[in-house]
Length: 115
Image: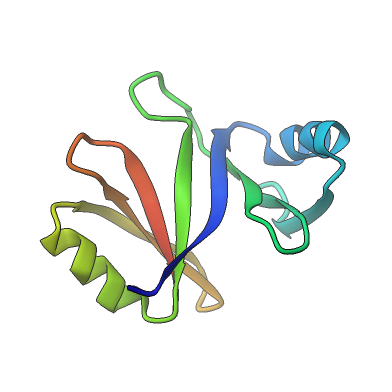
């Protein structure tokens, strides 16, 4: 297996504002990867906390999810699908940052990002 825990991500309507608030709470550095869309709080050697804009963080969807990182995203997506995950959608900010949204057997969303 080659998946690493990269980020715990929160869905929200204003990632810049929520990230700034949590940065004050946690003392982490803010990294606006895509301002207004996806913001990270980073700490050396640790799991990042992410905030992503979604149009409507509905009650039926978990607002926090795991973001996993893989050197070979396609191979890892295929592996977890065989284990029982369901692919939901594919996203990206150009070729620089791509990810696949999946659901575990009970419907909890998680993402695998990578090349």
